[in-house]
Picture (cartoon, rainbow, N blue to C red):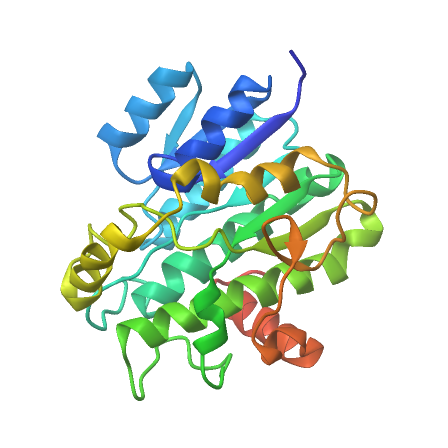
Length: 274
């Protein structure tokens, strides 16, 4: 057994649960974070692992989660920001942001920011689960976190997944010199339930597509596990975007350092981080 602590959000199902099982079997202390009490507790019980509940559509839930993790965990070696999903129609959260953007980007941005001292002290790896969908994001406006114009559920998801890449890139740029390493990856198209809880046309289309999907959650989790268990700057390059353990082509905007900085600043203001 080793003493590495791995926190995985969205670990009650799909890729997150698959990664948790693999990392637990390798000897890591895995911390399960999920939204559904029943599903999260089921995975945690299976792995004899601690679990925490948080609804990322409410930023106060994220703040409470960060506070509990800080209190309970003196170190965090890996933070896998895996929670996310495709939502249905345009909805604003209680915090005033478009739901898809908040769940996929603002909530993990806030969680990571609040845990930053612990992550830096632990020389942690931070991993963002993105998607091939980032390449269809259209023009990203960091100041429009409500997606007030020309909304579509697919477009919102694509923009959020581009934000995941930009956030990992900027997080690494700002804090790699202090020992933190960040990267993003896409798992491929995987058989998961990530859209089913939210309904709408996206869930119908995604479900109808499942019979053509070849990747299992275990296969989708491989790159996450690889990033979590290998050495940054030696086995993989921090700040990059990966697929199948190799640097992958992303939306051209993912290489715009000024855009990444603007997104960081807009996100910090949105979630009230000093």
